[in-house]
Length: 306
Image (cartoon, rainbow, N blue to C red):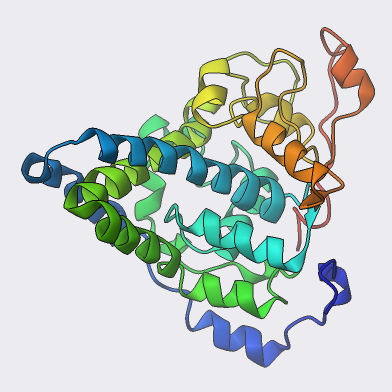
């Protein structure tokens, strides 16, 4: 099969296959989430050696890229293209961050955009409060299943369905590798500390990026741009930009809006590892401020699938 096979050219899974999948997507993220926080206390016994700290910092940013480029900009919004092999690697890297399966994440995020800061947006701090918007929503059992109708474009890939079903496999492989190479400190500090930091870094976009920052565009939600959040999330903090034009790979619309994820993807495109990176319209890049009240970018079919 040609490496550039597009998703739309592949057959969709039949109803029986999708029904079978529905019986195997119910592993809750609650227990791993709690246990990972408790495991961080193991540093009392392992110590915090510098090599483990370096591992933690590197894994934080590598896996943040997996979340921002993989979970978010590729799988949720399809803002750029890659090969089928590249797609699998993006999915595996994203899932090492232990934020459930790639199909679950994309489906969940598409629902968020459809109902952003309204009833139906399960992690809106505007609707449910800041704590619930940040972490409380994780404990909702109704969010465990994958919403297959939202990811029909992605669920046709058997390798993505496999990763979605066994979503703990990538982080387990990474955790065992840290243990084997750097010992118990590598596992506790290198893996668990960076995993917990990664989670809360990503979750700030669900919570703080809807209550703290500046609104360049009048969108239907309370999304905001925040430079500090953009640094710790490699570009996701330009959240109001994103909600205004969600089809753009680039989320920092101005030259001074640092978007590390986009820069890395741009370099990757020079080597044809990714391509067709979408950018916002030229007038948004040139203007110092939007004209009057900008209309929301209509959601693409893939984002607002029925």
